[in-house]
Length: 490
Image (cartoon, rainbow, N blue to C red):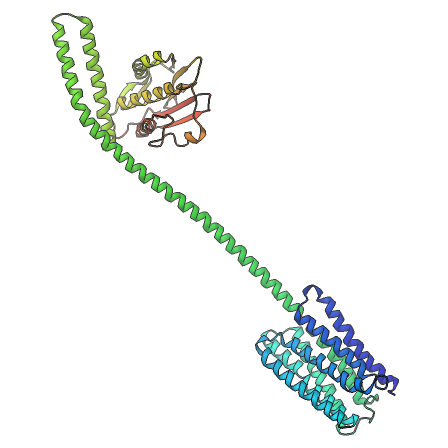
């Protein structure tokens, strides 16, 4: 039977195996993986093997010699492979070597047991083999430290040295006979072996835990960096998407402007062509009107003579308008003169009065003063007022307004003339207000979408601006602002 002291020391080694490997299991429970499981389970298996090895006389010889040795081989082999998982580039080769070496050792050991070798010789083989194989702890720690030297790698090298020295001293003592024939006697070499095992088992487990935690921290840092890179890519893609959207919007606007320019050029050509074609019948009408006036002068028929004079006046106004528009679209210039805006408004009201009377619309004028002089193209400004008044008249189409009314208001504010045309008609939707002055956009079913665009073109050629305020169902106000102290380019 073993001395109680030897059994106690062996059981303490077993306790270290069980406690440390169990502690690592629970410490890394949230980061459990194959490597951690292999290390901890292998350590527990080695602990059970130590129990059997310390229980000679209490367990059968088969358990002591065969089962305990098999468990020790399995436990040590599992921990070696677990450590080699930190060196995946050497894992395949080292695992093959481990399998072969441990298999040969176990088969040889079993044969020697069967051949009745003495316990001393079996112990020499046992301690020598593990002194040799456990040096790989140091080798693994060394290779890991070449990648990155840490406390974990240094402790792993220390454990390898401790395993090899303590087991080697025990083996040498048995070889040279300086140890007791009783291999479990508390001789100096056995005490060194026990202390070395305590140090080696403790440092190897701390080393494994440290390296595992260091790798977990590296993975967390890499995850954070990857997350940051992903966020950067997402921000870059968002920025790129925003810039792309902006570029697409600018492209659409450029296309719209080019289309508008093309349409404007087409309108200019159309106006020039119409002006050329209309001027000929207008000239003929004027000649006929003058001839009619001459023929009726002899008969002193005043009524016919007034009609003739009105025809000539209207003919001149139409001709002036056509020439003015042709000049605007072909040369971009205007014929600037100084005129009274209020008088021009009265002329427009006179022209539009028949249409106003026909639709029972009341038109009133709110002038700032009797004389409000403006420098610009009188014919073009007249066309602006006519367009705005006609628009106001058309706003009553299709609605039942009891008291339809239009107000024309003029004012002078900071050397800027303001002209407002307000109606209480149907109003304009908000979406349509945003594109009301675009070419070929109209609120009328039969409209061409040219009138307000032409109005804006004329106003801007006079260095002015036009705006609209409208509420659906509550009427509309068009406001024109033109400086009275600027002389536009001719």
